[in-house]
Amino acid sequence: MNEKNNRGKFASKIGVILASAGSAVGLGNIWRFPTETGENGGAAFILLYICCILLLGLPVMISEFLIGRRTHADASAAFEILAPKHHQWHWVGRIGLLAGIMIFSFYSVVAGWTLNYAVQAGLNRFNQMVSTDGSNVYSSYFNSFVSDPLMPTLCLVFFILLTHYVVARGIEKGIERFSKIMMPTLFLLLLLLAGFAMTTEGAAEGLNFLFRPDFSKINSSVVLSAMGQAFFSLSIGIGCLCTYASYFRKEVNLARTAGSVALIDTFVAIISGIIIFPAVYSVAGMEPSEGPSLVFVALPNIFHIIFSDYPVLAYVLPFLFYFLLVLASLTSTISMHELITAYFHESHHMSRKKATYMVTAICLVLGTLCSLSLGVGSSYTIAGMTLFDFFDYLTAKWMLPIGGLFIVIFTGWYLDRKILWEELTNNGSLRFFGFHIFLFVLKYVAPLGIFMIFLDQLGVF
Ligand code: TRP
Image (tube, rainbow, N blue to C red):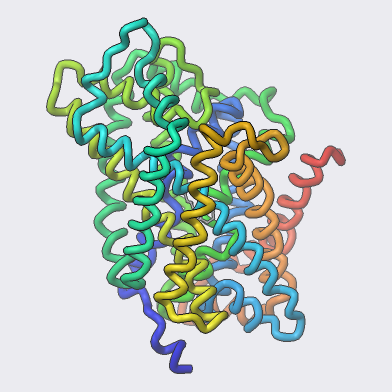
């Protein structure tokens, strides 16, 4: 009991929303969303993605919140507490942990790149790069940077240590305060950049790509990607938000918090698209389907073009952008680190300090391997993919939706209806509009939706 009372708590309601949104908003929105949108044909993919957020993602998120807040325990123990007789349910939490370790490892590689880009922008390097042979300097820079064995690895190590530092400081001091400042600043800057993007010559074509759907582009792999992206972006399917919710107070309105987080998250993703696709169409030779390099090649290019007459802006805005991207990634990796740390600390009675070090050590090793797999280790592949791509593919497209499927089955079919109602209405003190509709989506629409997308991918239809 003591242990429970000593657990940290988020101090304010806005802190709760910002910390959860801080987990959700990150490279998933600003780097992965444009990459996936570009590779999957644009507007039609975005429509599918939004359907997945509403019908599949929100029920999973609300379920994670209520499981976490009900039990005040780490994700794996939470299932054990709620389902003591059928204790196989804790496997949902454990597999989530494994996915969390894999995501943290490959995610930190890209976060390391953003760190390097923030430093390079701070040194004003991007404005000094000139091409000698007519090729795109930003593209050459990116390719040579990521395949270098040393620099990206150093950035990754530094970034993981930064995450370690914040997690070690604990919930309120570390995570909440940090998110409160970072999130609003990031918002404002993205809006400002979207405004500038509208003035570029590729703006019309970029917006067309983003908002005019071509339904002939939809196939089973596009649908799987949209579902994976929705889960990845909302940070759901592995118990990450379940762990955060275990630090929520009893007054927090879970459904409304989930709605706000999903809204903020989708908004940031779409705004990132509005910044990046006009940029892509303004740079000669770039294609939306370029892949993971979009944010690191199209953006420096376009900053250079738009602000060529305003050296101060050309220096300040890119620096601020990459700096905030580092912070946005940090609020996401903190939530992954916290998920695993809380598990070792609480379920294995390890001191919090020791648990934090252990998670950091595991992810340093795996993260380094992911980073090297893009350069010197690129010949070692799994199912034809580098370790980096394999971790991304396996987690986002399979592990998160499968985790989500079990989570909605758990809350919709296994958990006592009374617990659901108590958590969603805070013991009757809140009104939950449309409880029956929500139950219907939770019990039928979400699990069947996820299941059918998998069957479709496996070629059953
Ligand atoms: N959602 C975050 C992003 O968009 C990444 C993230 C944090 C995540 N925690 C997660 C993804 C848990 C999947 C599961 O950047």
